[in-house]
Image 1 (spheres, rainbow, N blue to C red):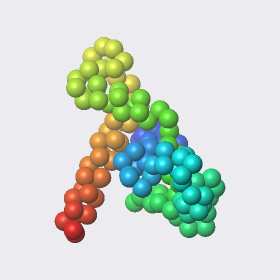
Image 2: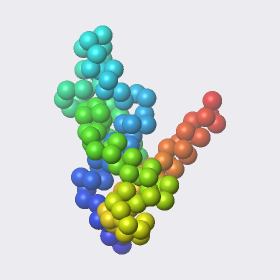
Image 3: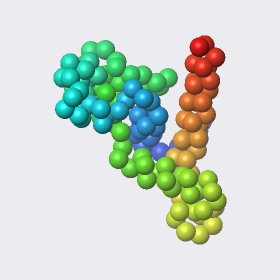
Image 4: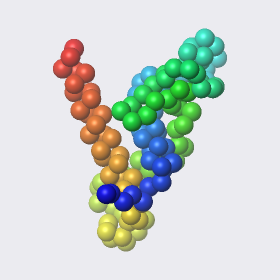
Length: 127
């Protein structure tokens, strides 16, 4: 049994934010432009949940556009991770002094990146 410091909300938020940031289909900036037709917004369920999933990962089905669940703190977490990956503890002190919850978030991001690379490689091989 694995014990996690991340709450279910933390986990869902991080996974959703990652897939939202790395999936071309989910671009809230396109939906927010006046040129985007209202029909497309309804198809993507931008404003409310629909009957059918509009996007899904191996773990989650989104009945509303996944962009609606993106955590605004995700870019901050990614910046902290980049510093950490370079050997800089963004919280000061030694690398081993970084908060456990943050390290767990970084590890989750690493596993999501590996999963995406594997998925992209499979899609590329099918072409």
